[in-house]
Image: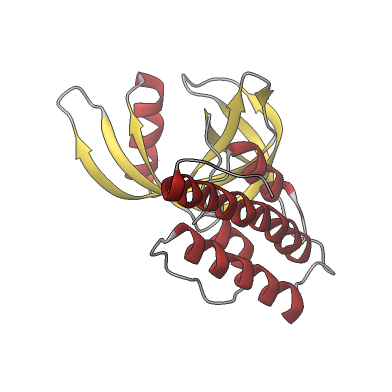
Length: 203
């Protein structure tokens, strides 16, 4: 176990994902300042009205976009290893805790079938959304790389973060993306039919 600084946010950071953060509270300006000075990571935990989750992601500042006169910062962080909060600790202005690494199960590797299914649904979603999104190469972190390219809400991202099998993550992600494809295809059909004659006729 190791003790790290913790940053609870209404945000889920996935391994390999990059997100911008605006740092303005004094305690978190202190935390990020120390991470920059010592080239260390902090732990990002998802927290909302239902409480704080115990499994989060180590985050490293990879770019400082702007530093204001009052010490506020705009930075970009990248997700690293997952961790589980074992026990909160005291002594700092910001939250700290003892954490341990969260690893996948030894038999949780994904096969070609799961990889191709997830990539196939992702490609369909890109077409339906008429978006230009770079497709990641197959890897041990494919589920996280695909999920970081689609905005489908914090709860589902946290669910994926907590799964300890790449195979199960890819299967669950394929289900989520298939639902998104169906919803977007239906929305497009409704728009197109309504634009054609001002009416939408149920089938």
